Length: 120
Image 1 (spheres, rainbow, N blue to C red):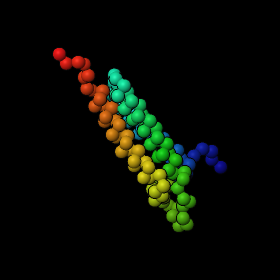
Image 2 (spheres, rainbow, N blue to C red; image 1 turned 90 degrees about the vertical axis):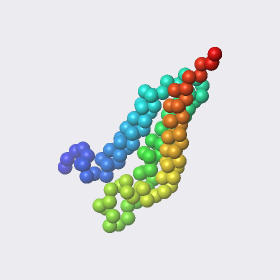
Image 3 (tube, helix red, strand yellow; image 1 turned 135 degrees about the vertical axis):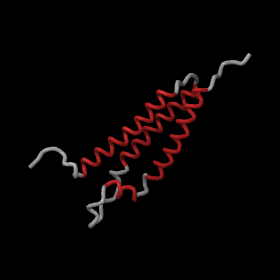
C-alpha cells in the first residue's frame, strides 16, 4: 500500500483544481496591485471592490465542485470538473461575479490613471 496521492486520484484532481483557481485569482489581484495606484477614494473603493470580487469568485469556483451531484453510474471515467459544470447552481453566480470583477478591475485601473489635479 502506497502513501500519498496518486495522479489518478480524485482528491489529487480536486486539490490541483482548487490550487489553479486560487492561483488565477491571485494573479488577477497581483496584476491590479501592480498596475493601479489608487490615489483617491473612488479609485480606492473600486480597487477594494475588485479584490473582494476576486475573493468571492475564488470561493465560488472552489466550492462548485464540492456541491456537484454524485457521479452517475457508468460515468466513472469522466473528470470531476465536467460533472460539476452540469450543475448550474453556482455557475450562474460565478459568471455574474466574473462580469462584476472585470468591470471593477478595468474601472479601478482607469480611475487610477486619471489625473485629478485642478486645471489652471
